[in-house]
Length: 173
Image (tube, rainbow, N blue to C red; front, side, top):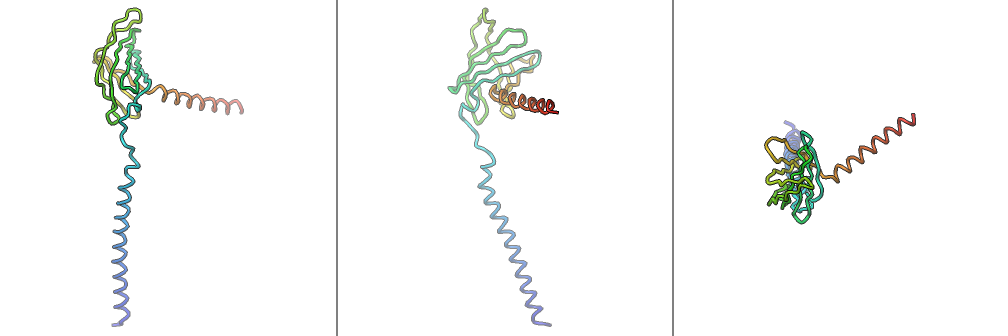
């Protein structure tokens, strides 16, 4: 037997073991660094009132229209037009609990014949996907889907700018 062949086999085996160890070491290092960056991919949950504060508006079936004005002080106003022109209204105390809007207290508005306001005693307000809210007030209606007015105004401006750009291109042809 050739002495170099045995030596060559030992070198080859040693190289395989080193490559195997290096593979596991690299995997371990990537895993450890990956743990540190996982928090960068997921933002921390926001508990500040400013996350929900502002004006919200939306519509639902049968011509219903809903409006919320949520203050950074944790108080807000809800108005609902069920589609007949009269308002249901309430003041509410609320808080942001891990990016979930939680209603703490409901204070129905007083009846006002002049302003066509009736008290709103109960309603359900839920945080939905993509920074929208769902507001329901009775079992008969499906409720309203609300978005921040600031967000919809921004999207409306984007859409208008896109349409203007399309019309400008069409006029230039």
